[in-house]
Image (cartoon, rainbow, N blue to C red; front, side, top):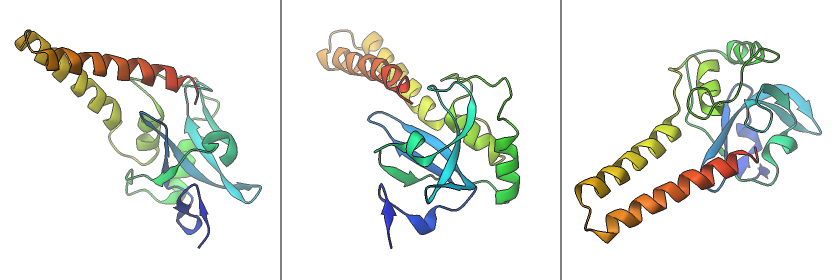
Length: 162
C-alpha cells in the first residue's frame, strides 16, 4: 500500500489525529474529509498561524515524518470534524502551555484538554531543577538541567516553524 511520510494512506481516515514529527516534539492535526491534490486537508492549531485552520497536507506536513496519533475519543468522525471546524475563525490563539495543537485535537475528540508532551517537558525540567537543588555537587545533575534548558529553548525555536 502506498505511504505518505511513513503512514499508510489507508489509515488517513477523516477525524483521526496524526502526529507530525519535529526534532523535539510532535505537531498534532486532524484529518479532514476535504481533499486537495489527492491528499486530505488537515485541521490544526499551530504557532505558525496562531489560529485554527484547515490547510493542505503539504503546507502542514512538508517533508516531516507522519505517524498515527494515539489521541482517540469516542465521538464520530462527523462530530470530531464539526467540533474542529467550529473553531475556525474563532478568537483562539496558540499558547504552548494552555491551548496548543494537542489541546485542540483532544478537544475535538471530546477528551480532557491537556498536553501530554508539554507535561513531559515540564516534569523533565522540574526533575532536572530538583536534582540540582538536592545534589549541588554532582556535575551530572547540573548537566541534566543544562540539557533540559537547552531542549526547552530548542522547542521554543522549533515551534516558530509550524
